[in-house]
Image 1 (spheres, rainbow, N blue to C red):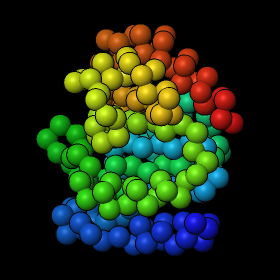
Image 2: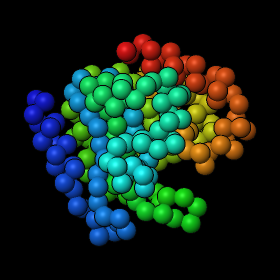
Image 3: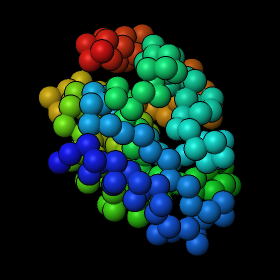
Length: 194
């Protein structure tokens, strides 16, 4: 597969209107990818600010994620280094306690084709339960246990993480082991793929 075929696929994705009628704010797929990317980030779905700007992780969650990765914006937004392919490519809208879940159409429709065109990925971050439920076989019942057992998927180059949303502040405070044990291992892995 050539770079041009990935470019065409990305263009097709950005034009996708499959579930536009179900989206209060309309369709605006947000994705970043290049064949050269060594890090793949699979999160939930864009938030409203990301929908408005078209820039992935362009919000408080993104600031925290870049802090966890010890990565500046220049590197993070370089598609030749970092691919960003959310479970739902468009902002799903507001629910009662935050954003709605990612649309179920996106991952089956686009992920396999995109991931097949990312031959240089050395590490995939699975951020939040939707990505973990989709990509991890035989995972623990809770996100907390999944993140605690992050080393279980090292042989597959998968790394589960909680969502860096400000809404998860309580989880982060209750689970201090995340900062002490998980983040140093994550940062080591990120440094190895520079």
